[in-house]
View 1 (cartoon, helix red, strand yellow):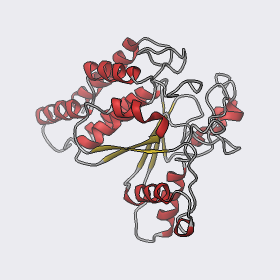
View 2 (cartoon, one colour):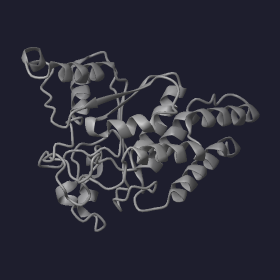
View 3 (cartoon, one colour):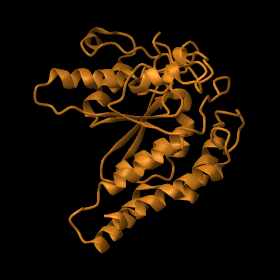
View 4 (tube, helix red, strand yellow):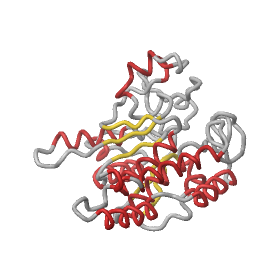
Length: 285
C-alpha cells in the first residue's frame, strides 16, 4: 500500500484499537501512536471507542535525538517533547503490525520495499529503546514491558525470533526485512489483527478474581469480554470507516474491507472463536 495515500492497510488498525479498547475498559489510558500519514484512518478506527484513548501522530520525516541532546536540539522541539513525554508516562509499550528496523536500520514491507526512504516511517521504535534506557538507569523503577504482535517478520519486536525469520522459506526477503528489535513478549499471528483480538481477550481474563466461585467467574468473564472485545458489528463498522478514509487491503491493494487478501468473514470468525474460547475458561478450571 506504500504507493497510495494514505499508505495504511486494513491489518493493524483493528487489532490496535481492540487492544486500546481493552486497556481503557480496565481504567487505564491508552495512547495510539502512529505517523501523520495514518492519522485519518486511525482516528476513524477509534471513533466508537469509549474511555481514555487518544491518538498521537509523528511525521515520517521526524528525527529523534537522545533525551540529553533534546535540551539543545533546536529543530522541531515539539516532536522531541511529545516523544519523551510518551516515554516517561507509559506503563508499557505494545506494537501491533508496526514495521521495525532491519539490520541496516531501515523499515521494509514484506515485499522488500523501503518505507524509510519514502518517509513513511517515523522512528517510533526508539520509544522502546528510550523506555529501556530510562528503566536501566533507575535502581528502583520496575522494568516496563514491550509486547509485540506481528505476522511477517518485518514487524517491530520480531527480532526475538530473527533467526527463524531469516531461515523461513515462507518469508521471501527475511534476511533483508527481518526486524532486529526484540520484544520482551512476542505474539506471532497469521494476521496481526487476530493477535490483537487475542491479547484483548487475555486482558479481559486477567481482570477476573480466580478465588471466586465458578458461577461468579463465568459472570465476570462474560462482563469483561463484553467490555474488552469488539463485536462483529464493531469490526464491520470500523473497517467501513477506515476504508472510507482510504485504507486498503495490504495483500491486494484494493480499497475494500478485506484483510490480508481474505474476506472479512474470516477475521470475524476468528474473533468469534476467541470469544468462545475465553468464555469457556471458567469451565476448564
